[in-house]
Length: 343
View 1: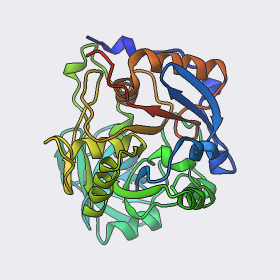
View 2: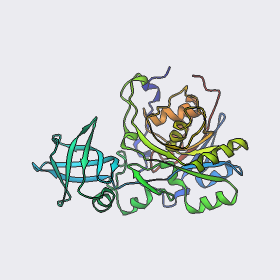
View 3: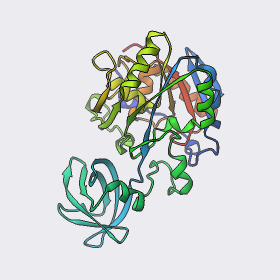
């Protein structure tokens, strides 16, 4: 039985990528196959895939979800939207010297009044005066992850989105998808590698630390996803043909596995708080493209469940020794699911 400390590791701060590479597919790729570790580059991903293998992408689009403003009392405040509830209401985290009261008003950017309607757990319910998506675009700031020690700039507004981002709703990027550029997607298509899409709106909870040593006590954050029938059909066709189903990112994997809880992948929309730890039985995904994750994070636990705890420990030690770049703007791994992992 694993505990929180089993997923800790020392990471030199210099390996945390603060900026993206100019070319998306120029990042490095660590391929973990059986007991072998192979150093490669992301544009060589195609060499590890066969005709009619299926890549499943998350097409969520990152919102400009961070606001800065003041309370009616004059105190400064920072808002991070967690989830859009309807076109004028959202859940948000608020950082302020004192928590805002129910029915109080926040002035954003010196000209926009937002009402605090109440609380929902750790989040605040905010009411906006008009369409929230238009307000986000006009007044919002791109929310880079907390380990990127700088403010987002104009380049990030393009680079922190995947080239296939379509559905607005995320507050963090599905970062494995950031390595794909149009050139690589064209090459994959020319080789006959299939692609399919789903949507999972990544919430700020993806950065939420696990605080309990006993993993069963951790309350997993909830995220919304939708899987279209055409993606289900593509997965079933790949499975029937004996081809690989490759989740691009842990978000795609969580959506696919959440929609497979009955034993078979089904289309539709739902909420998921699926917490994957070693011992979990995977039902749909065969391979995973993913970045390197934070120590003690739920995502590190997920990849350890998928590829094997010891394999991931060895892979991370190798990546640190070889100075791979970590986290959202960092390098990537290609993992295969291993059925011989002891629970």
